[in-house]
Image (cartoon, rainbow, N blue to C red):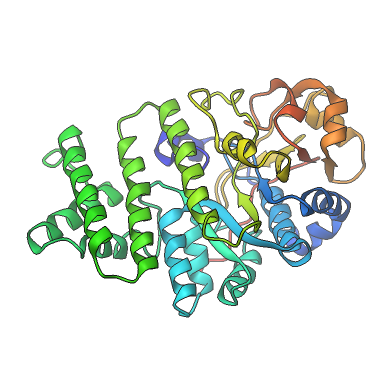
Amino acid sequence: MTFVRSLFPAFALALGAPAPAAPAPAAEASVWAPALRAAERDLCGRQVALLGENGFHGDGKTVAFKAALVRRLVTRCGFRAVFFEASHYDFIAVRRAVRRKEPVMDAMISSAIGGIWNRDREMAPLIPFLAREAQAGRVVLGGLDDQLGSAGAFYSLDSMPAELAAALPPPRREPCRTALRQRIWSAYSAASPHDEASRSRLKACVAEMAAAHASTPADRETGAEYRQMLLSAGRAIERDFSGPKAMIAGRDRSMYLNFRWLAARLPPGSKIVVWSANPHVARDAALAADFTAGANLGAFLHRDYGRRSFALGFSAASGASGRAGGTAIPIPPAAPDSIEGVLAGETSADAAYAGPARLAALGKRPGSLFDHGKAVVARWADLFDGIVTFRTERPPEPLPAG
């Protein structure tokens, strides 16, 4: 969800050719073993590992590589939290289930991760692993995204508005539940539009719910979770009529605030994986066309963690991209002097890894890490600590129906 879902509907309609069938993720991971080992080595000693991908998502090998890398970071390097660029609210519900020793089902994790990745066959092996680790208390899972209305979400679409409104006095309970649910589902019409007046009513409801939960005799942690959900939702609602660039900047700042809330509930020094996209994890994303209105998530985290953080970008020298089961969009072949062209040309392997020293040596050159179709010139060592480049990328494979 690098870009707000509603801003780029044409992405799903882009023309292209069907992608070839992909090999099984495990088979690909064995081919990428040298790059995986190198990335693991550089990330292992850091406290925050930020894993990106192309800004429009839809890169199957990247998802498979990241899924394999997360397992390595958890099992070999002691990472104890994985935060996704996904629903903050549904992952709080997962967190609550763990705390209450209720079952944590694979379907809950998949639902919380959301449709950007949970339909990808490449992601599928990671989900039961994370569910087991979370249930056992070895890994804390979290979502950073404050956006409301994640398709298929198991908690935030229906249960959340009812729970948040339950603390209100009866005369306000149903109107506020209805207003929040209407915003979550975007269930507006000409007769009942979403305008400044409806947003003002909704903001009043959010403030009332937050005050009610501050004084409700719920258990302390559940009350804190409800108030955090309302803070996050309030920031999303505040951006409702913002322009695209301001909306993206506000969303990244909100993801950072949600990160801070989640991280503050971990033991001191806990090692955290952030699963997101290149424009979010880069130390500076100002070269990404829509990230010029304010600092991105990675800039905030780099400010806080410095060398204890590591931003890993992903790109490709050729191939295709697209959503699982959708249309493949060709990736223009990389120029020989681009970051992708140089790295792919240095090895016969399908995946090439460049760490901090190699990136610094490569200096300033074109690259397409923010958009496969649009190269920008940058000193990439200033933006990322490491880069994985695939010789040929492909879209994710869809999971079988049912």
